[in-house]
Length: 137
Image (tube, rainbow, N blue to C red):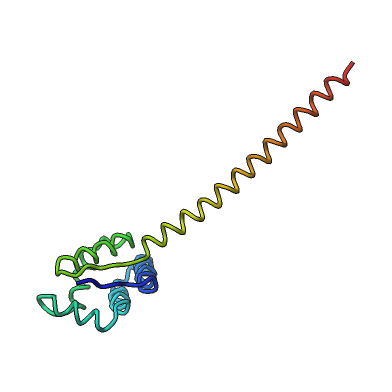
């Protein structure tokens, strides 16, 4: 079975995890992660868990989490859900990568233009120096 988390849910988990890292508070993180899932998703997950308790499942995931890397938490959550037959799908990875490429491309293009400007300045300076040498007695 697949469970899909939209960008808003992933963002919510990321922000909560970052806050938990800063404040060393996994209790509120557990609740924030639960809220990222819909009621139907929680019910489906609980049906597949041996103990039937998503809250306890999250407690175990957070206990296993190192507490210092947001991506590690998401990967761990994905892995643990995979072990009970749930494929966690997100669209954030692809979109973040595309946004990064677009931003990087624009910045690289701007950098090339800036380099061109400097090259022109260098040529102007060389011309000025040649003219000064020609004028010197």
